[in-house]
Image 1: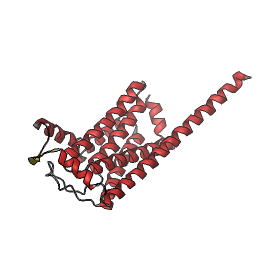
Image 2: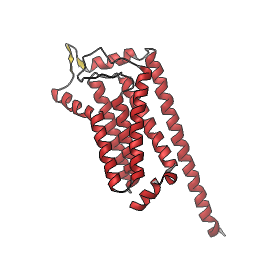
Image 3: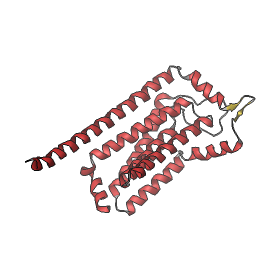
Image 4: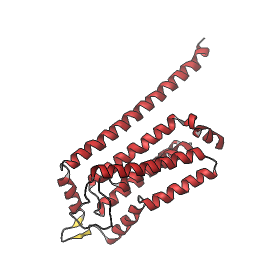
Length: 243
């Protein structure tokens, strides 16, 4: 009797764990969106300006604000790192990944990556035009910029792209340590890009924080939608077929 009922009990337990995971993911997404707009409200009211200014000034030499603190090679490294979150590099990364997935006959998965990247770019433009925050003027910029400041597009789009790719690689990996490595590297790259924007004086710290928050939100939302409709869109079948 116990043997007959055990498979059903295991299925129910697995279903319960699955529902809890969805609930946690949903709560996290809501918290990220709430945090983003709460921070945006503080920024628009000017409540963060003093802290933002202090951080930017602290990263420059007291006798020459055009020169950042630290040795010269740090500036060169961060100039390289900021390009990792730029539209050119991110576009090439997406193009390369989509091409690889297409060659593996995983067309629907490639479409998911492409739609996530494209929708993230649109969301970035919408948010920048919604807040219209001017770029920092307290220190000279070490990189040419033209768009508005809030949220940081580099921080936001690198979070969207790298976290999406990190999550995709996590699902392909089998060992737990490999899964942690994949998502850890995605987060690490995203953090480096954001830090570089503040160091170069082209963004306030709150711009970058907002970019990270919205980027995490968008990547999580797209991941949640993709997981929900895996069977309907054929993504799950593609993954099973290529294993």
